Each structure stands twice: as C-alpha cells, then as structure tokens.
Length: 73
Image 1 (cartoon, rainbow, N blue to C red):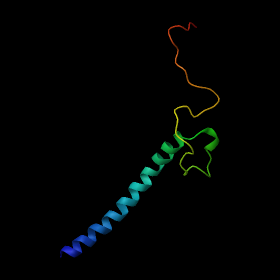
Image 2: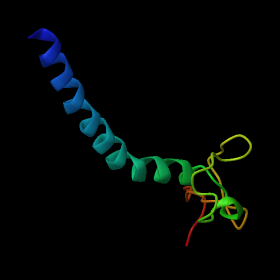
Image 3: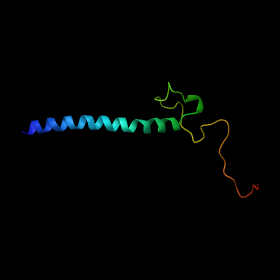
C-alpha cells in the first residue's frame, strides 16, 4: 500500500515541477537580460548568461546621473 501511495505522489510531483519551471522561465530571461549590454541582447542569445562581469551601467550611450544640489536647472 505504501509503495502504491509513493508512486502516486511521484506522478503528482512531475507535472507540478514542470509547471513551476514553465512559470519561472520568463523571470529567468528577464533577470539574465537585465545584466547584459545592448550588444548582447538578441533573440538567439537570450538564454546565454552575460559575458564579462555584471555592472550597474550596461549602456555606453550615457550614464544615469542624479541631480545634485549644485546643479540648477
């Protein structure tokens, strides 16, 4: 009886794990893409990890800067 119950639980967990992986895949893609530079973002390479060390500024076009109290607009 216990082996039959264990087999039933195994068949229950297999679809649950597959659904959890399917549900979390977009989160993985968003997280990995967030650490990539603009040159690395492509449909062919969206599953690859970013090359080099991750940095806060991923764009070479410009940095995000906060206005200080010294700048007057």
